[in-house]
Length: 211
Ligand code: SAH
Image (cartoon, rainbow, N blue to C red; front, side):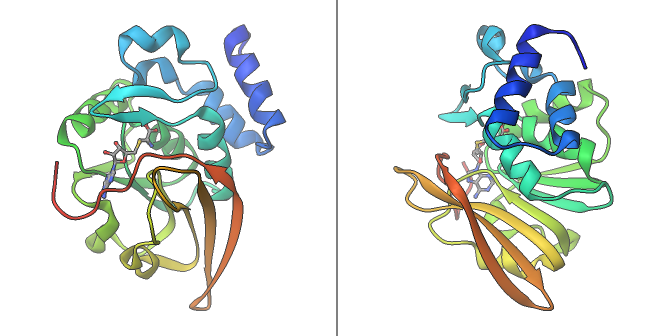
């Protein structure tokens, strides 16, 4: 364990919040969140709270990143699709726990910054694209896991179609202005089952047309 007290405190809060998977906790501890936030917020980077990243978007709260990542049940061999790259922080966490991550962001400037930050950390197992992530990434499908880090009114059908059999899709569903339900959708022998993992609050998934 790293002895930085801010990291230790964050890991403690994650454990208290329900993140038990030690691989997820290590990934959070070892990923420098301060590198993914604007410099003026770097001092708050180890606080368990979302922070602004520009363009009216936010880097997610670490506890939510931890719970969503844990729900993906990654073992290291999976191909993952992330919708909503944002700062690239969640991408970096996923890259440590899966074989490959494809990530889509609709705001080009955010994606460019995220790509730089991922490169600075020598993360190589990530493919990125500017686009509408609600359409998925058909050429790279199917995906063993899909994570959506923006709130959708409905689960986009292309994402369900691009989920591999035996796969897990984690997506906040609901009104963007209010709390959303975090849905865990599994595809088994072509059949879908859905669990809910509490309430979250995300920026909206904006579909159709680029920024
Ligand atoms: N996972 C990010 C959270 C980013 S906030 C992080 O750790 O920083 C959600 C992001 O989703 C925003 O950057 C927003 O621009 C993006 N987004 C919203 N709708 C989208 C869409 N249809 N396709 C791709 N990205 C989208």
